[in-house]
Image 1: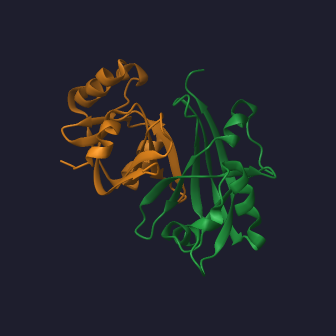
Image 2: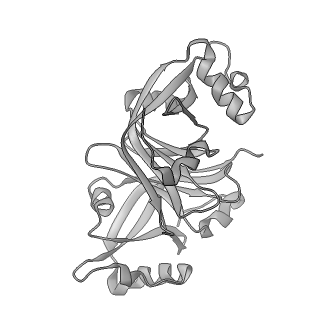
Amino acid sequence: MTTFPDSHKDLLDAPVASLTTISADGFPQSTLVWFLHDDGELKISLNGARLKTKNLIKRPQVSLLILDFSNPQRYLDVRGTAVVSADEGGELAKKVGAKYNADLSTRDRPGEQRLAVTIEPNGVYAVDLTR
Amino acid sequence: MTTFPDSHKDLLDAPVASLTTISADGFPQSTLVWFLHDDGELKISLNGARLKTKNLIKRPQVSLLILDFSNPQRYLDVRGTAVVSADEGGELAKKVGAKYNADLSTRDRPGEQRLAVTIEPNGVYAVDLTR
């Protein structure tokens, strides 16, 4: 279980975060993604067929920047390693779907696999430039 | 001069963007930064003594995610190469300071150099999930 600073714990329930992976040509790639704070960990449900997912499996170094959309000067920067596993029974997809009131399985084509990504942080930086 | 899609041109004047560099250990590092759309290019004024700046000089592959803080589903993702030069006469720092109504030179200690970073994009991705 990862410890997050009390000052930024509300951001663990934020709607989106910027996930950065590293592409095959060595460039960082950032996209806004849905995420879930579950069992003390930051988790993401990804479709295994996406290029972003393939990049992440090959180069598991990621950054997850959790933004406060009501205050651009406040955010949580999590740097870590992405641990990817099969999402057995679609358990994580269901939990993420419950947070967002959405059915993630409708986004997958036949034969595509849904994966569970857990971020194991090696650094958690809580930033608040207003303080 | 870089061409940005009309649908997202307003974001070129947004207050902050997430700049991702790659650290010495190969992990992406994202921080929210001030930026300026100037002469058709995306520019950032950085203090040369900062670790982030040193990372950027060694590994110029960057991503700049320009967020719409009024709509988390809309953003501009710029991937490219950072070209770093001395900010002669503090010209860029002054322009950035004018955007933010701030004096950037007060952030520099004696002997520290202010650098001008221009992002040369190899990819510009305009995302709007609400459309």
